Length: 229
Image (cartoon, rainbow, N blue to C red; front, side, top):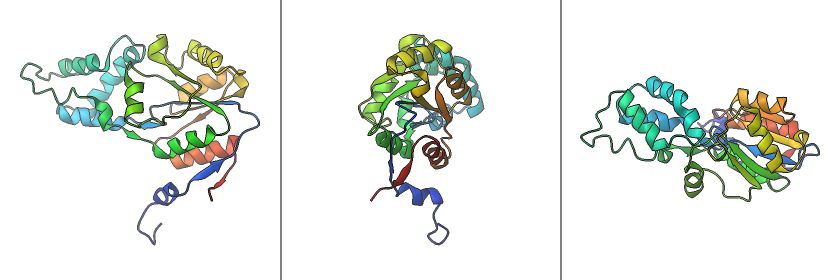
C-alpha cells in the first residue's frame, strides 16, 4: 500500500472473498444504518445546509429518532422540528434545499454488501433495523441496500418497537423461523448486540469506520473464507 500510495483498505476492496457456510448458524440478520449504509454524513450535510452546528443537530436526532423509528414521526416532520428548534427561518422558502431527502447524502458500505451477498449463498438472511417509514424502499431504489432475496425484513416503524427492546428480538426470532441459538446478528450498536446475546442469539458488533476489520473478525468467528478465483 505504501509503494502504491494508497491505503490497505483500497487494496482489500479489490479482493472479493468466497464465504462458506456455518455449522452453528442457520439465519443471519444484518442491521442497515452503520452496517450496510453510512448514514452520519447526511446529518453533517443537513447541518451545513441550515448553517447550524453539527452537535446541535445530532443532539436533536438522538432526542427524536426513537419517535421516527417507531413510526410516530416522519423524517420530514423531524427535519422541520429541527429547523424550528434551531431558529432557522422557514417562511422565506430558503429551507427548501435542507428539506430534500437526506438519503441522497448517504453512502453504501460496499464491503458489507459483498458479505451479505456471499452469506446469502449459504444461509437465509434478513434485515433487522430501527428505521423510519419510507426509508427502506428508497434505500433499495438508490442501491444503498442490496436487492437480494431476504427471508424477512423486520422494521421498527412497522412494529412500534425499537432495538434493544426485548420484544423486537422476539418478533425477529419468530420471523426467522429458527431457534435463537441459530441466529447471528450484525449491528453497529453495542447495546443492541448485548440485547441480542441476552436473548440467546450470536451477535457481533460492526464498526462502520473499519468495515474490513469487522468483516474479517465476523467471518473468522462464524464462517470461513478464501479469495475468489
